[in-house]
Length: 607
Ligand SMILES: Cc1ncc(C[n+]2csc(CCOP(=O)(O)OP(=O)(O)O)c2C)c(N)n1
Ligand SMILES: [Mg+2]
Image (cartoon, rainbow, N blue to C red; front, side):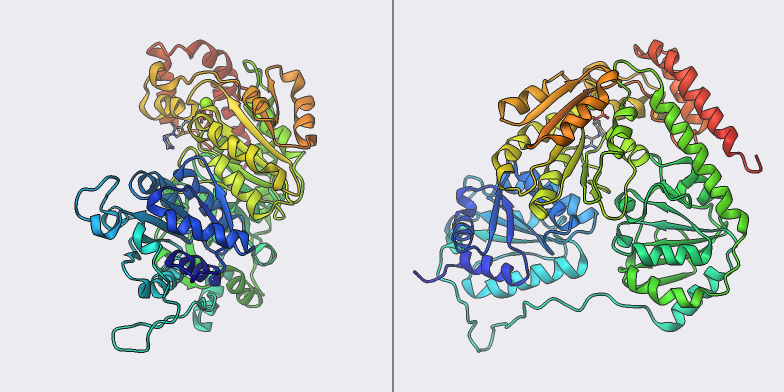
């Protein structure tokens, strides 16, 4: 074998960090690295997942880590346009605190600075997204420390780092042994120890505060995933109710009567009440940004657990901040909580709110719609999910129905672009979930706008790869409402505006037909009477399946606390002659206002 190149060194050193799956797209700017990945694939030491667009490589590298596949995500893309395309996917990782290393090609060193074709100032361009560490390699001796530092920084800071590689440098002979001489650095590819337990005094202070609560609320986020048993034990010891941020939705079973489900604008009314009526708040692994869904400032005494101390006290004025691993910290707290005396009526109230919310959910889903009610479709998915299902969700009304209508359990995994809230992540996430665990079934829930943004393209990747998955079950549910419905609702509710058709309407595309052309299964659902039939067919299919559900864009997304302002905004837009007004009024008076009022009635304290 010829001597290893810089590209080979990059790949093998990342392998030492456990990063062996490369999502990407080739180009001459990254040619030397791609060839090296090819050699590693041949040797059984790496995997290359070709996607259809560099942005989706970024989403998939992020999701691979979120679904527990790779410890560290890697995206490899070419210079110029490839580098620009990748950015959005990398921002998804950065905002959701996922470690990802970007390998980005660059113009050859001799041409750098000449306004060469595809030449961009990548150190500057990546200076924000990879602000913790972005480095342009110009000599083979730098590879070891560049990769070690990129990997370590990404892992320790849970962020994005970038290594930029001019094309000629990638093909130079590797320097695997850095000289033992002045000016050379020798680095380690051994990860740091994992985060641990906070100091005992801080734990005792937190325990004392938590024990003082009569009505304790817990807010659990992505950082709590994997700590189901500990979270349950602490919640039981405190008689607490638990609400979940979107990225932490799988941590506790949605059907437990002390779990109020999702929180925030897309969340549940019981989560809102839980926060607004508690006297003590425990936040675990979350910085859920919608501050109006926390207790009012001054209402509750609060403790926060987070691996990153810089995120403590960011959303609520906490009194004790425990910096440590969620599972270990909860474990350490548990014995200190003995003697807590929660109000016995608190969990009863929570259970009652949950019952009322569930009844309302059933009413909403059963409401007549044209042609199919999206909530009915999503509710139909719940009963069909397997214990080991992996669920990927896109940004749109799908996010709302996922938050409210899909019942998850801790054996499942679910994720989305949670903080960047980018459209177009759903299918790349679903593909990454399969690459992470090819033996587990996958469900993707995607709006038609998002499907048109990245989904129709990435379905090609599904067609390209599915035969390599040991379990081929991969159901894509497209919510075809021929509209960017989420933003149409935002325009109505937040601005009191009439949605502007030319901006909001999206073309009708036969997604199931497209799946058929690609050799995948699929069917369009237009008749609500066929929901069960089509769902059964989709979940039993022995190959990926696109369920193209034609749903009503006018089924209202009602915020959990139905603010009067928002209802008035909706009414104002209708008065201005919203073309959907007639349907919204027909459905809306009965559903939006009628059902909201019924639910509110059931929730009023003391009723
Ligand atoms: C990349 C990107 N562009 C625009 C938005 C703003 N946005 C949020 S939801 C949404 C509509 C999504 O439409 P669709 O996928 O059809 O789902 P629907 O809401 O209709 O169910 C838009 C445009 C975004 N979040 N991300
Ligand atoms: Mg839509």
